[in-house]
Image (cartoon, rainbow, N blue to C red; front, side, top):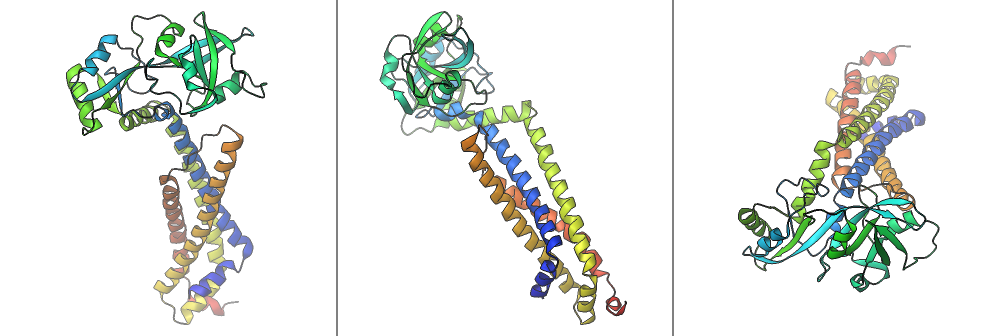
Length: 379
């Protein structure tokens, strides 16, 4: 009977293609928009991910996410170092600075200040120059995307370029690879002592304390001790990433906008597939009536309709997911599209398609079940 159902399904190629394309379009739109949303949210945590070799971030207790900067005093660093279970702790500066280029233009940059002696948090991949050059006076390292943004005409990296920040001279000694950020500003790395000069003068300048627990102690336990003894906020790297993600999801309209687009894709796909599938069922009422006249039960007829819907759903889902993945792969290399197909995306799309075909088949199966077998003998 499944073979008969399949032959009925492909008997009208135009309607069959219309049903498949309706499901494929819905799958494509849902998966694509959900993946772009995941990629956009991932950008908010990129600078936490780039700081490798650190499991604990210490900050003011009221900090909500990575860009919610509330400076701490130097005494806080020594208090953290004095907590039992802390192996080491270093300064880390993060802020925005305004760079004045040699042509007189200004550009906002993300300024990161690394501990002078250890350079903890330094970029892992240096494309030009050397990380050790950062120890030179006025030295800075810029990310590759930022360099191309500021000097798009350069065919090769021009090490030694000079520009000003806070009326102080900065010398480019290297170019590195860094993850894209939510703000898309150029990223400038320098030593902590140098960053305090590039940044506007404040009484407190230390943004974060990067720490590591002693071997044998979990990061969660060390965070608990730091918070209890100092009153500062102490979070594991994963917890801080989660805090940042949830802040942007709760405080911005990004999730709502993407949800509306996904919902529209689901509704449009259901409408197209449902209408076409319904017309297909109506046109095949005589075939269903003939089967009932030959003794096919309602359960068998229902199984045939569900089989047809599942076949259409599987093919449409595969085409939609495949096209979305191909689109993301191609566009990531050719543009600045934020695209990340996290594993819940194809799973959630599959659930949406399943609901879509079930709703569609429920409408169609009712029409097939109430058909009168005598329709076969009518003109």
